[in-house]
Image (cartoon, rainbow, N blue to C red; front, side):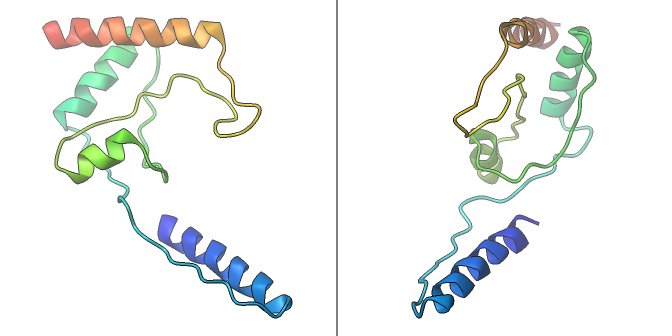
Length: 117
């Protein structure tokens, strides 16, 4: 889980600091929780229909990271993340192919069509 991973990182800081005779002052703060929407949640069903209409197979999963959807879901506003093909995110090599951006546009177009049906 995300909390277990956070504790592992905290422990690594503690051990490293102790090795050089120092103390690590690490505080963990749970800013948001992972959320799994039910498979019949309307926002998820709508997103899956748009993905399928684009010729893609939806891949639903819980992620361990901070997103707008994490914050909105925490406030009771059901939200999903639509991955758009970003690779090596949060690194110096982060990139996305133009073809993936074009697919993202088609997904959004289809999302609007599904919402208007």
